[in-house]
Image 1 (tube, rainbow, N blue to C red):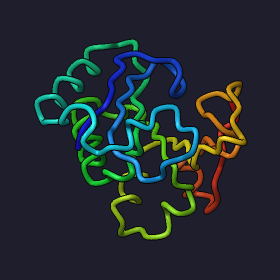
Image 2 (cartoon, rainbow, N blue to C red; image 1 turned 90 degrees about the vertical axis):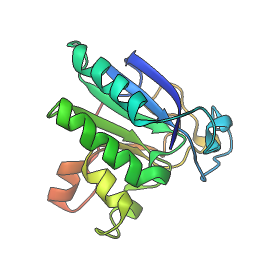
Image 3 (spheres, rainbow, N blue to C red; image 1 turned 180 degrees about the vertical axis):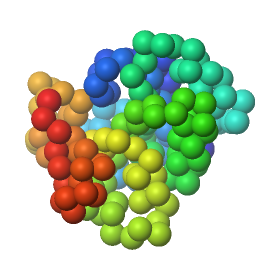
Length: 168
């Protein structure tokens, strides 16, 4: 798994001050994507255990952070590795909030509870789902680029067996 970007602090990819890690690789290939270079799984730098630990240590030492966001590319194309990374983050920073972006829709991610995608989803608190649709582009929306994309509270959605959107 490669990463194609890392912001130690951001207010644009979720509530609170968050660290943001951009994972390389996406097969959705949304027309109008803001950064198609991230579609390539080899783009960026290898996300080695050493690099992961450097980022985890930096996040753990930043008391201002409210959590971490995984974006891309699409982290769900590297679901096993991304889930393992979250496990490592939680070992160092218990209860650290994790938001995640995907071009999949929530309903597709919960189809199989035995899938790597479901395992990754369950490790996160919030998912911003759905492909970017250029004709629905709206730059005034918080945390997303097109109006079809939703900001979903994962645990509430599981509890109510329906996608529960957060209001922002």
